[in-house]
Length: 162
Ligand code: ADP
Image: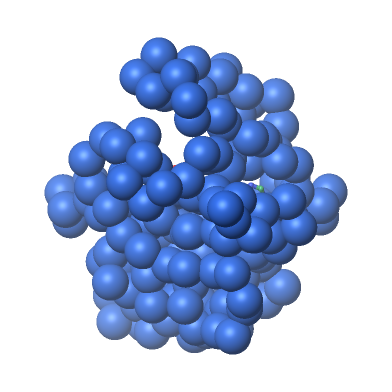
C-alpha cells in the first residue's frame, strides 16, 4: 500500500513556502494530494478555486506522486475518501501553533485513525504567507522569489485589472 497524505489549504495563492512543504512531504510519503479548499467567492479569496488549482498544477507539472484536487465539506471525510492516513500542515512560527493544534485535535476527535503531520519550511519561508504576498502585490511591489513565476504573473494581471 502506498503511503498517501493530503496537504489541505486555501493556497490563495500558492507560495514558495507551500512548494517547500510539498517537496518535504514527498520525501516522507509515496503520494501527496494537494487539496484546495473550495470556498464560494463569499469568503473573500482573491483567486477562484479553479485558478488556485491551476496555479499549483502549473508550478508542479511533472512532479511524480503528486495530485492536485479541490474539496469542500469536512476535511477528514475527504482524507478518508481518497484513502489517505495523514494530513500535512505547516508550522512557520509559534503564532501558527494555537490554531493548528486546535484543528489537529478536532480532526482527531472526528476521525481518530487520521494523523496530522506538521512540517517546518526552510527558514527563508518562515515569514511568508499568501496574505502578505497579496498585500505586497496589491501595492505594486515585486514578489519575485516568494511565489512561482506563474503566480507572479497572475497576481500582476489581477491587480492591473483593479
Ligand atoms: P489555510 O487557509 O488552510 O491556512 P494556507 O494556504 O494559508 O491555507 O496554508 C495551508 C498550509 O500551509 C497551512 O498549514 C499553513 O500553515 C502552511 N503554510 C502557509 N505558508 C507557509 C510557508 N511559508 N511555509 C510553510 N508552511 C506554510
